[in-house]
Length: 319
Image (cartoon, rainbow, N blue to C red; front, top):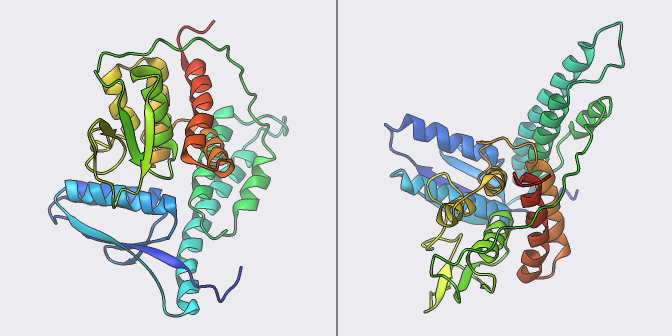
């Protein structure tokens, strides 16, 4: 990578009520989950990207909901040497994460019975490590050392076998919320929570729903529009719940929707609340859809099939 390159950075500066110890720990864990590094006390940094800006904005909303204050800034440092110093902070954090996974794998491999050196490690170990590895890779912004070592150690474990499940029909759409015929508005650059929410809107609320993608900074609501997953929206994050979870409450959730909601929560909120083993693979598929789509409409169209089959795999009516 070019050592003279200047990077754009996002800076989150905030202040929390001093008596709220639980809140401070909660916000700190959220910042750790998105890969932010501490620069000066309550000042945290991330590389300036679409996803990192969204992550900071949601955390800022949580800070304000807890009675705190803060702001997100974007800018460049005056010298590339300063950029490199910040990169070291990010790389050091991720190298520590990779090292911990490698040590866990080495311990598991060395603990195999001597009389059966090729014994297969429990599938739960491999699934958990792979899930954690993908979480680390998602916030490894500059390619820290140690990832290759973890992959090599994983290669010594037999991969878990995939299970194919039969597709079942999606339940009929629900139109009891008097929301049909509306235009659903959300921020441009849709990702997992907005993709899943749009899928749920079309499957359970209004099959003919129209979607509009806007710049949240300049958008002004119009008659007949319903906003979701954006600030001041009718349907958006509520406390530590993502928008998809909020919409499930409206339409009534079953086992399939609940499972998808837990996956979307883990991917969007990044707090590992449910620690769903499927989240890492779904994240990879979502990133592929984003990379291969030219518009938000395409992202919704292509992700809809993913959520259809995901719902089928979790449905209790499968045979």
